[in-house]
Length: 292
Length: 181
Ligand code: SF4
Ligand code: SF4
Image 1 (cartoon, rainbow over the protein chains, first blue to last red):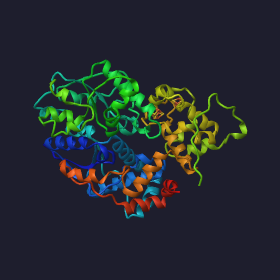
Image 2 (cartoon, rainbow over the protein chains, first blue to last red):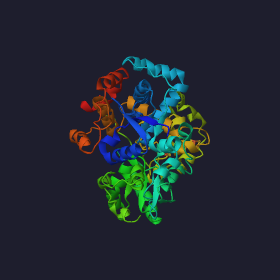
Image 3 (tube, rainbow over the protein chains, first blue to last red):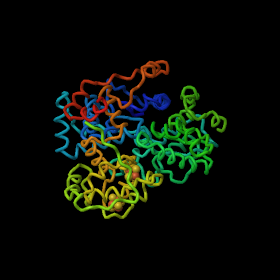
Image 4 (cartoon, rainbow over the protein chains, first blue to last red):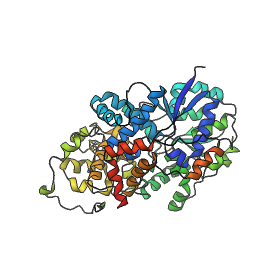
């Protein structure tokens, strides 16, 4: 098997609150034979301050890209926000020579230069589908999750804007579904499946995101989804950590466990719930373990 | 510097006086990378119709923000709370028949509001965190220590000197420091 090797870009949200995503991703990737190289240092991808100062976002992103260029390794991220940002900046700075020069003028002050065109940026599921391939994932499944009915929530920046991302069809995404089906579980359709979870604005207005995520949970309940599968730390916070809050707000009980995709895959690959940090989830996920 | 307040759009809308409009505003915005196509918006309303935030908010209407920008309602747009409600999900960007990158136009407007001293507290906090730690969130020491117990490698320390230096040159530090008044 051809060696797959990436520089792991962790971003800020995962070490801040979602260790279970990192733990399960590392376990699964190692067993799949994918090597994850640690970054000696990195900074925020830049996305959180795009609204404050666009050029500062570009500089932060480009600085991370420079670190990867130095190592001559493609970047793998678990967060769609980081992936989308680094991918977009990697592409747009290469195309816009004038802006690249401006950003490099800043970077020169810290002894760096963004070259462009040297490395690629992948989100976890993009790497699994495009680089490793669904067949390899199916081969790794030893305990198929037959009988389990789940649904997916992609995370906007894995899909959109289509012209920068070019991964799956944003109107009818199928690749995460295929990844889920590779575990033996069934992946259900539901209303407003491709809608955003609302997390990015929760610091400005919490009601709108809670109602939005609540609407998605209502639609998931309507199709009897036994779990929701996410691939983003922010979506995960919205649906898992905030689920009790949403239940109070809507006076409705959901109790829908929210698993990171590598947790689901890990179960099918024979890891124990403990190894995949399933106990760290806010909404109890043990009930799905007895289903399959 | 006194802090400016975000304004929730008054309903019903106040009458617009042409003297309050800035006819050059849309050209200023269209110079920002990503926001070029603001002039092409023909008000079809697709962005608002497909926006998940607009479905649950009474005040957030991306089409309206595009129109206000075209008309040059600079002060009202830059002080509007609605400006900060876009979740950057990019649904509208994929759907706009005129190729307007709505989310990028809004980002250009937000950047301009920040220059005028208007930004929600959360962005000030994120900026200050990045400047001081390299990361957007303040990760508690205990959590960093626990990584080892969980079998995770240590989180590297970010190069804070580099980040602070870049923020200084780009005058980002100034924007975030207003909290320390
Ligand atoms: S979808 Fe595009 S053209 Fe239509 S109102 Fe929105 S920005 Fe304007
Ligand atoms: S990018 Fe912003 S305006 Fe457009 S659909 Fe998403 S939240 Fe609404």
